[in-house]
Structure formats: C-alpha cells, structure tokens
Length: 76
Length: 340
Image (tube, rainbow over all chains, first blue to last red; front, side, top):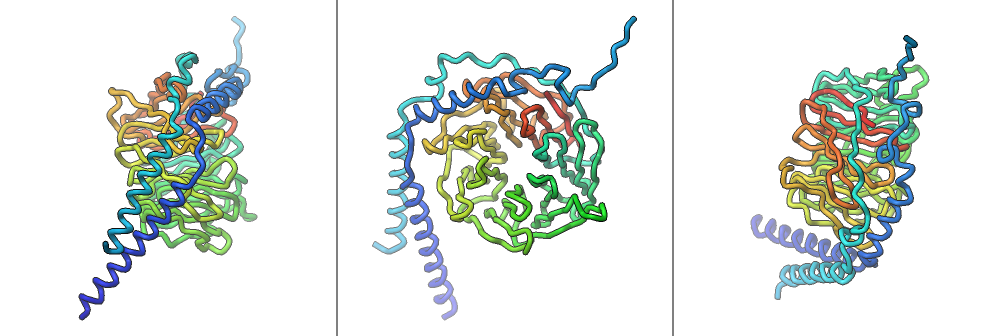
C-alpha cells in the first residue's frame, strides 16, 4: 500500500515539475529578439564611444595614477 | 498518450521554437561586423601594489564603489578590507567559519558580506558606532554552499548557492524575499545589472540565466558552454553578459538578440576560467585561469592582447574598479595584486 502511495506522489511531483518546465519554456520562447547585426553594431558603438574614457585601454599618465608610487626626484 | 509524455513533447517543441527564433535573427556575426576594426594594441599592465596579509588561499575579492577600498576573503578565516592606494589593512575581520567562498562590498560602503561551506551569508556592519566590526545578520536557509553574494543596497542582498538556487534576502528581517529556482546544477556565480532590475547566474548545468528581480522570474537561459560556468559579469552597457567556464572558454551572450555572439578561446588554453571582469568600456575582458595567469581579451576581435603573469598559484578572483582605473587579482598564493 505504502509503495503504491509514494510512487503516485512521485508521479504527481514529476508531472508538476514537467508543467513548470513547459511554463518556463513558454516564457523564454515568447521574448522579443533584435537582429544580431543590430546587437553587434550597438556593442561596437558602445566600445567606440567609451574607449577614450577607459584607463586600462588608454594607459594612465604616471602623475594621474593613484596606484603608482611617486618617487622623489634627485638632482645629481 | 500519457500526460507526462505530452508534457515532454511540448517541452521539446518549445525548445525547437526557441532555437528557430534565435536562428531567425542571426543575420550577421560579430566577427564580420568588426572586420573593419583594428585589434587593440598589446595591453601591458604592471603590478602596482601587492596586498600581503592573508595566510591561506584567497577565494574572493570585491571592490568598493569608491574604487579605493576592497574586501578579500581567504580560507585563513579572515575578511580583510584594504586601502588599495596605501596597501593598509582597514579591517581584519575574523570569521566564524573559515570555509569562505565569496565576499561582497555594499554599494554604500557600510557593509560587507561573506559565506561559503557554512551555507550562510553573514553580513558585517563596518560603520558600527563603537568602531568594532561585528556580524549584523546571518542569512540562513540555503541547503548548499554559498558560492556568491551581491548587495542591491544596505537592505537587500542576492546570493547564489550549491543548492541550485539564488535568493533575494531582506537583510533587516533576515528572511528570504524571493527564491530563484530553475538551474539544474550548483549556482556558482552571479552579477547584478547596472540598472539593478535584473541579475544573471552561472551554474554547473553549463547555463547562464537572466532573472527579473521583482517578478522573481527567469527570463532567458543561455547554453553553449560544455562545462560548469564559474564566473559571470555584465558587459558595461547592460545588454550583454560574459561568462567563464571550466571548458576553458569565455563567451559573450547578447541579451536582446538572446544568443551567443562570440567565444574567447585559444587552443593553447586548456584550463578552466575562474573569474571574469570587463574593463570600463567593455573593449577588454580580463579573465583569470587555473594556470595561474590572467588573459586580457579584445572583446570585439576575440584575440588575446595581454597577460597578467605574477601569481604563483591559481587566480581565483578578479575585479575592475568602478572608475576603470585598476584591476585586482586574488590568488590561491594568498596575495592580491593591483594592476594598471
């Protein structure tokens, strides 16, 4: 009796899980998608617009680098 | 046909629908689009500071939004808050559990959080009136290890766990607001979108998922990786996601086109990616690997343009400051290095 009960519960759990999976897939299938060409163009544009403000890309002058130790100059 | 079989068929049909919809908008490749752009010149970053003090492997680090302070977590059982300009330790916080796997700095700078094999996320108040840093909250409910945590504000934090879920917590009451379930494997990493409306998670089921924080819903799932995704980050414009995996590759997925645009790989790289961070403009992607190095990729041209070599063990974590001025790497060799 007990085994029949638990296998029934297992089946209804499996069905509940399968229903959730289908519901989730419905959500993911229904989204709006833009063309890859537009996505790529926008990425390129963003990088281009922001490149000049990117310190790791452009390099940082020593005088403006808070991580660089400023060594005193010795006049020989 | 039984109900189970019907549901299985419907799921397969929906998966085919998604594949077809993605193909229908796949009218170009990133490679073709950028063919007229030159590769970025060789990027040579130097170690400017080495943060010494941990006595065991460093598992995580996170920059404060002020781009100066950062927090690191080590299995020596300590969280250390560093002033990266001076290398001074601002706080050394002893942890109840030394098996820490993640740490985070609140955007306000008022708190830090950590967690790991204790399955909990512990929140520490850095600005207590008596000057002592102590545990403010212990967020307990996950049934697996805490792999990552990120603050939305001083009152909300999102965690990812080996129990395959992510959770949004109310820090004040210490309770779960939302459970984000859906991954079929341990969640390893998460990142919050620049507008704080969504977050992405990477898991051992080889997928990345985009979640709507307020709706509590998974909006999109991205596949393609052949192994665990260990690291995930948003591209700075919030429209794309970068991932790092045990399959030795990084990938860039565009959220609006709902698909992978490019893979960052090289036949000479055969070890897993542990950590990932974009530079301020997104043009550079810095990724830490199991082979002790960090590779710098030109994100548009998918070419390696630099290497950060300097650690004597696995690079476990990486972070770029909010102002883009520096990158920090943390390693199993117990050191953190600041590069620019």
